[in-house]
Image (cartoon, rainbow, N blue to C red):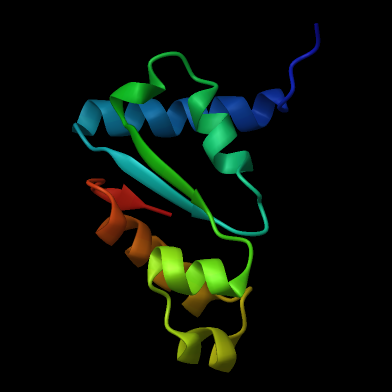
Length: 103
């Protein structure tokens, strides 16, 4: 059976899991356009539960606001696909979880 995810993506996820395991950090992921792909790559790694705290897929603007606490002003001013919104989503993932690091 062929792998569902590209090997390069899995290897990058493995590096993230190993680095955070070594540092004793738990991670959270806030995704939109990637639709859970980052979370899927991280959880593909055996033992990722040592570091993976939570993943939030908030595709709609309403979900970004209600689930991650992104302000409507940020989305309206900068757009749903912007550095400002991604930053707010990561901060929301940190607030909603017990993770130390979020993207």
